[in-house]
Length: 174
Image 1: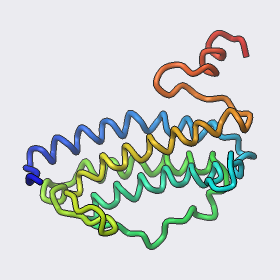
Image 2: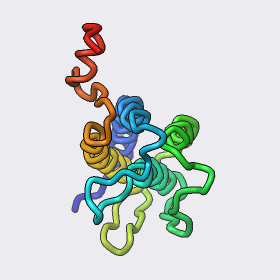
Image 3: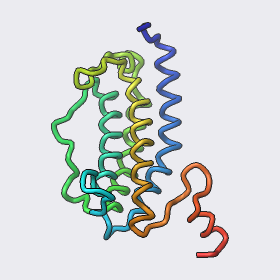
Image 4: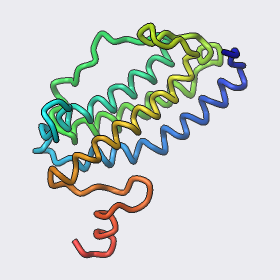
């Protein structure tokens, strides 16, 4: 694998921060769409309950961004904090935490972005590359969570363009 150059690391950081910022409000909207009394809903016994999946999305994104800042992953505390009981709690935490994470990443010097960071012995990549991992991981699991919504009686928000529910709301039909 070719060595990443400083200008490439800076470009990737700025590009991925922009992408993460654009996706943030969409992800938060999907999490906010989970009814607060339906956090334990799961479409099958082998999948995470909705509130745990919401936490997995935002907690992992935070952990990936922290790994860029800290130059290492910290898996010592990955569980959902007890005070985050509902999807609304998780969405608020995400709304408070993401801007701070983005600011910290944006302020990093290039040598921190280029530092090779190990992910569980599976990947050894420049720290900045984990912003891409955060991005695709969040989108993947946001799609999974969006599939929980209608079966639990919730409305699916617009993600990339109107959803059936957002179009109905716009037309005043529901």
